[in-house]
Structure formats: C-alpha cells, structure tokens
Image (tube, rainbow over all chains, first blue to last red; front, side):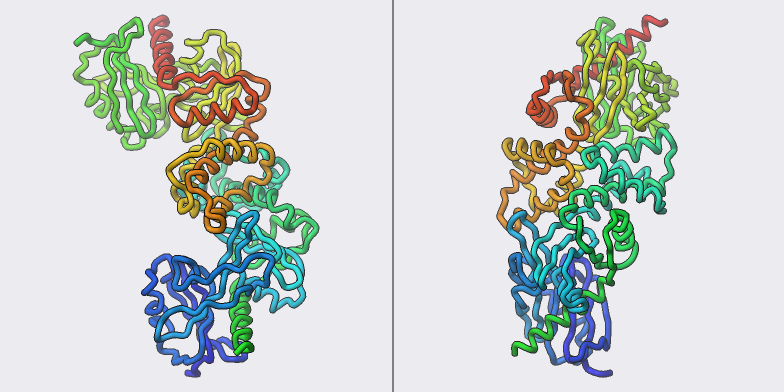
Length: 295
Length: 295
C-alpha cells in the first residue's frame, strides 16, 4: 500500500472522516467513523484518530477542519473575523506526540453575531474549484449557512436553524403524530411560496399541520413536505438580502441540497449545485498547499 | 365530611384534577394527580378516577373536560363545529359501572382547520363569569389559543405552538447552551417589538442567540427572555387579525399569562386577565347546571 504524503480530516460533532492523500492531491484511502467531537474528551482525540489511520504509515502532516477546532474540541483554533479569506487565520497545531495535526480556524462575524466551523473549508474548496467566483454560497444542513463571497473573501454570513427546527418539530412535537415518512413535491413548493408571500403568518401555520389531519384527514406525507416547505420558505424570506439578484451556489448532496435548489430556483435565481464532500476535500487540499508553500 | 352533590373534573394529557361540589357551586374538596390521559389506556380511566375520589361518597354526576374526551381518551366526545356555543354538543357519557361521568365535547373549525379540547370549558366559564362579553380570549399554554367570541358563541379560533417551540428550542436545540434560568423584562419587550416589526426576519434571529453568547458573551438570562419574546412576537404578528381593535381577555395564571398580558398591552390593546382555574371550574359548573336543567 502506498503511504500517503499527508492526511485530510473532516471532524465534526458527530462524524470523523479521513483521506490518505498524495502531494499532488490524489486520494489513496478513505475511512470514516462515528467518533465525532461530541463523543470525545480532549485527551481522546489523538487515540481516536490513530485508531483510524495509524496503519497508513504517513509521516507527513494532517490537516483537519470542523468542530475538532472548537473550545470543546482537541485544540481551540481561534475564529478569524469577517471580512476575511475563508482560510483566514490559518492553522492551530493539536497537542499529541504521535500525530502532526493542524486544525483550520473557523470564522466569526461581530454584527450580527454569527460563527462557522467547517464551512469555511468548504468555501475555500469551492473557490479553488471555481476561481474568481463571486456570489452567495448556501450550505444546507442542521444549521444552514448563507455566505456572501467576493474577491476571495467571506464578506458576511447568516446561520439558520431550519434543519434542527424541522427535526424537533417533526420528531418531537405534537406534529409528529401527523407527519409521515414520504414526500410530496407540490406540497413542498406550495408551502415555500405561502411562507414567502406571508412570512408574518408563519406562526399560525404550524399547528394547522396537526389540525388538518384531525379535521380533514390530510395526508401525512404531504404534511412532511409542507412542514419542510414552510420552514425553508421562512428561511428564504429572511435570507432575501443574500440571494436577491445574486448567483447562488448550493454546496451539498442528497435530498436536502436538492430541495434547497428547487426552492431557490423557484424564486427565479440561477443556482449551481456542487458536491459538499468534494468541496471539503478541495478546501483541506488548499490549506495543505498553503502550509507547504509557507514552509 | 359532607358528601358532594356532584364532581367537577379537569383531565388533560398530563394531569387530573377533581373538585367535590355542592349543588350551589361551593367547592368542598380538591384533589389532583399526575395520571393524565397520556399515561392511561382506555380501561384504566375509571380506576384512576376512583382511586382519587372513591371515598368522597358522591352519588351524583361527574362532569369532565379536556383530553379525556379525545379519541385516545376514555370516551370520544365528538367535536362541535364553529360557529357554536362553547358547550356546543353537550356531553358524552363515559363507560364504567362505578361512576357516572359526562365528558364535554371539544370544538373544531373546518377552515383553517383547528381543534380545541378543554379550552371550550374555560371559555364557557369565562362567559358565565362575564355575561354578554364580546371580544377575543387568549389562552396561553403549550398550545396557545386565540378565540373570537361574540353573542355567546365561539366564532373562530387559532392555535399557536409557541409554548412547545419555546420548550424544544430552549431545552433541546443548540440554543440550550446559551439559555439560562433567569429573565429580563427589557430583553423580552425588545424582542417582541423586533419580531412584530420585521416578522419576515424571524428565522434569521434564532441562531443569533447562540452566536451572541459565543462572540459577544451575551447574558444567558437575557437570552431566555429574548427567545420567548421573539416567539411570542411572531405569534402576535400572526394573530393580529384577532387582537387588532378588540378587547382581549387573557385566561391563565402565573408567569406565562403575565408575559402575554405584558406583550399584548404593549400593542396598546386593553387586556383583562382572569384566573384559568377559576374559569375551568365555572365552565364545568355551567355544564352541570345545563345538564340538570335538561333532565
């Protein structure tokens, strides 16, 4: 087995992924585990990583992004402050004798207050794949980010808890009794449009998903799509200063990126969709190259 | 111990309360338990009630309201349909040889779909305490109801999940790390006003409660009041057709009724506040009297 020259690491709250890389950016190995930052005490990070890549025989550096760099992580990588390049503050070296790990800093915004960790690496990767790109990047997830990028800098950004709200409302609130596992594209599109045209009525629409099943026997699959559409519609209404008149890139994969793309496209905004994992790896590679160039 | 002539019962999802009553409406005994509808199978209701009031020696009827009358309850008491008097459909008799229990029907609205169970009794009670009252009744709770009442009928109503949203966001979402146990009246009032003046920006404000602590060290007590204010402000924005130009009665007690009263009063709307338990008991008494008059 070829020994990698360096290792790329994506270490979030709930997951850990590592890629063995050549100096020219070819992927040799890929592994993942569920030993995310949230499951580890500070002195357990090195062991968790070594368990995963110890037999790769890599003597080169390792570049990591994500919540591994938070206060509760392996090493606190201080936030850069907007406006700044996506890899603004560079790297923080993690403590540990067996591995040479460098963690990418997150980005904070002072007013309105906001923070990101991990997304800055995807943004750097997207920009390395799309040089000189200006516009707005939407990164759907548990906490979706809208990021205004210009001249290779993060100008401003905004986080929405839409994904977490959907999980709580569909899984734990009274609405769970009325929400099925399926989907309905038309119900989603109608709900997005309804929420955007009258966002001030939003709070009145949620319990209606329950009552509509009790009173009118509303389909539970349609109810799932409708809840998602109401929440994403409310997000789009609040994120209007970001996407209006801009070109938008949706960074992600799977169903969530697809429905965000559908909802944004329905506003007449041109959207390009890019795979999120590809952007992560490109960002880690950009950080590696920058480190090599500096030494 | 004087035997009660009849028994009043408030039986919700999480609680069971009973009052021993004289025919003229005096309370002789009060008991409560946590054996709410949600904890009981259909054949366990009679036992749970008998455990509580079996030794009172009451041979008269018992009048119950709340989720005990739902499909998952002791007996399904069909919904009356708006517009209707609050005690619209009268009573459904519960099965059981040892007790003579009559359950008050809930109310449904067809368009927009909505349902209530238990609140109709509080509304009937409020109207018996305030004859010929016309206006809007606000019943704060896990699911707050706004109810338009005119000429002794429920004309229309709307349910808001504000209380449940607050519990989920403050207790289970990422915001829980930034929310304390205290309170801040000014932060609440400012958040209500902010949410009402720009309800379309609502979705952008939630994660800000987390980021503001990370970036600016925002006080956790203020964050609790601010989350409550944002959610209640969004509710008031959506409920505007109910309260605008109306006189409003807030039915409830304690902190939640107090902050709703403060938020509504701040809109220049005159508010009267009435104790919710008193309204419940007055409503059960009204139902008892109606049953006696009919037999």
